[in-house]
Amino acid sequence: MKQIYLDNASTSFPKPESVPKAVFDFMTGIGANINRGTYESAYSAEETVFETREMLSELFNAGDCKNVVFTKNVTESINLLLKGFLKSGDHIICSSMEHNAVMRPLVQLNDYGVEFSRIPCDTEGNLNLDSLEGLIQPNTKAIIMMHASNVCGTIMPIEAVGEFCKSHNLSFFVDCAQTAGVIDIDMKKCHIDAICFTGHKSLLGPQGIGGIILTDELAEKLTPLTVGGTGSISHTEDTPTFMPDKFEAGTMNLPGIYGLNAGLKYINEIGISTIREHELFLTELFLEGLKKLNLQEEKIRIIGHTDIKDRTGVVSIQVIDQDQADVAYRLESEFSIMTRVGLHCAPNAHKTLNTYPEGTVRFSFGFFNTEDDVMASLSALESIIK
Image 1 (cartoon, helix red, strand yellow):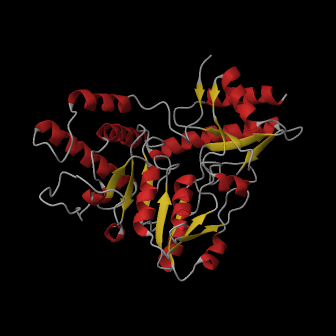
Image 2 (cartoon, helix red, strand yellow; image 1 turned 180 degrees about the vertical axis):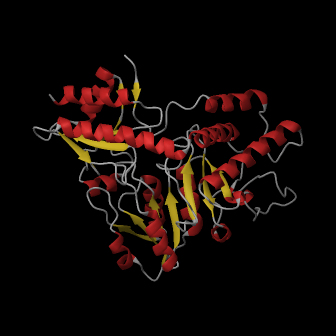
Image 3 (cartoon, helix red, strand yellow; image 1 turned 135 degrees about the vertical axis):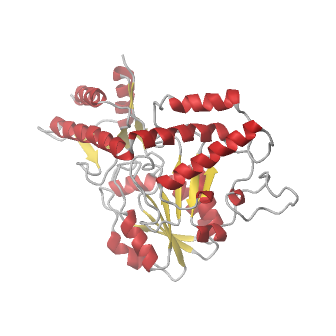
């Protein structure tokens, strides 16, 4: 039986053929570090890293590519950001839908005197914009939020929130783990001061590579999370103050950057609008199929929006009167359909959506999924609910 992978919100799979090839070619033909070697292969790697920074800067309309900082993943990027920016006595605002990549650093920082408040969201994950004004305190420094929910796919109104931040002199930080590479994001238009991304989801790269893009003003304010060797100004033990070296201590994940470079080139070739259109086509097909399964009585609860307005290709469901883990197990063991089940590292999002503590079964469609994958999933669910 053909395996059907529907866990793209966790990591995209399969990758374009060019991605593993780029990693292999680096490991077998280049192999050198950047900023260290004075030989051709090292210079070649430096050119690829620079090109990747340029593509990312262009993707997000970020400006100067020197402000693209590579990390292991979006979680490291968020930790770098929050722990380098916030001090004891500061206050920050987040949404009630945040992933633990945001919440765990904030809860940890709370022990050191940093306060946070949550913007309420409704049971479909929609942000209550009207509540923002009442959450601001004299010590509020910023708003941080995800661009789209990893639980239910609801897209947050980052342009409106960015305007609010600009008018109230607040910094604005965005976690775009679920949207980078599938939805256009304009840092300047949305007044974003820092955007945190990961390479292994819709950017189609390998695991272990991510990053953060900063404005010049924010980069000056941030304290580095990690310091050490950079290959630059090696005559001193002081940490570089220039970008991107200020935040890129240690040996870089060059195989990951090569893979990300190939993923970005693939996205540029296909076009974000084409990728988005395909994923929404599959999502709508799936949602309409779920509604048909519920014609006589509700047996499957759709979490979040029941249409494709303001959503991504992430669809979470609960099969009524069944254990959600059993549903996911049957999908894989009987039908070879791979989903994710549980709380998806976002417990408060589930409380907001009224799916806590049982969690959900999450289907997340990617560019390489097909109409047949959707129909097979609906057929499997029909068998399970009988």
